[in-house]
Length: 344
Length: 216
Image 1: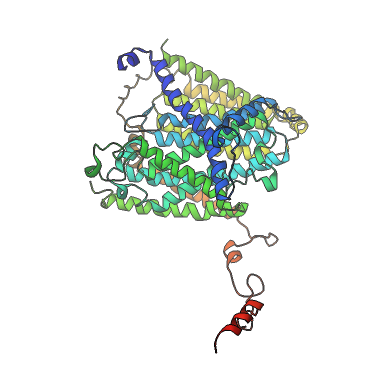
Image 2: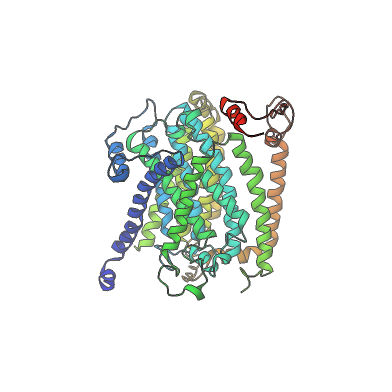
């Protein structure tokens, strides 16, 4: 098998690696939508979709077929080109960011040494899809949604960036793999403990960055109909939907990597070394990521939508000062070689 | 022609073409979006020059934040193209003069006389293990620490000035202090304490019957 793999041209190898990430990702996105409807259903004492396939398991496929069959309506006086490429601009960064993501020790497509920066810069591009969609639709509701989204993204990106600065100060590296290796030990040496305020800020900013409830004012069904994608139908709408869910999965996986030790086992290596299922491995990363993904749904089923001025206040006046103070604390702890995290 | 050179010419061509679009588009939103394309291809050129950190930061800061705010403002503008065109002819002589002056300066400084491949030896290629971010940080905070600190102070002054200029107390806004708003206090606005006289157990036919059966 290895010889056969090495015999393939480099381009084909890279393409196969990309497919090995993108296809499961899109499958996960499809079933994440089903999970959302089921989980929120059970939280509201309903059953959720249960008609298509056994226990509703084929529902995402039925949804996809339905959306593909629908007509793509172009609004009058819409900017045709921009209207059509906006969904693509939204989804490309959400998928391209996975190129530098380490799934296990050394299991990464492009092991670049500034991977954290790469992900941060790509996720900052996602907002263009929303802004362009809102403007190109030639609709008041869409423009309002785009404006809200732009202001919100810029505000929370700063808090998110500062939270990541804390992580890179703690790990001393911008490489995601190095960040995980710097946390090795047990559940107590992961960064959630010394960086607890940054962890909270990062997760909440992540919810705000992906425009999810309770920060979903960019969609705000009850005020501005559906916000930036009100004019989109069929696959245009579906691609925005895919981008939103792919971003949620990305934020969940990144939280797991940076604060919960990625693929590391929560038990010390001296206890579980070599035991299949308890030793370090991809399954731990998957488990942690699923935890965060569930949190996204849980938040949506629990909290009412934030008022817009309060979102801005939380981002600028609460989160940014917290992160700045905690970066100073972390820097002090690193210089003082505070055990057990920085004792070596 | 190596693959690297091919990439360089691709991105250079995209950068030039999109820069041309920036100044020739009538619609300001389109112009801003072409500017984004220019920045992205500029970042790609920097990455080709092995300046990965700068390339990614260019995208992060300029494309991800500055241009978003630009777009935000431009979308809000109500641009009247007729007035713009009327002014175009009026300002053409002055604009052309400034443009020619700048072109002359650029040719003078970076012209072939003192800015060509023959004037500079090609720098040694950095190895795969060289950490761009680390090197940049080391030189910024050791050799160039005073210029960096001076730039930081300058930016701080600019921030203070910008905040001072824009922050003025307006009396006609209906701003609400969320802390005051969510504070629960006694009084007519949030909670009302109702006094009720204490009463005995509820008297229903069943309880009355039970009370009768109980031995006294």
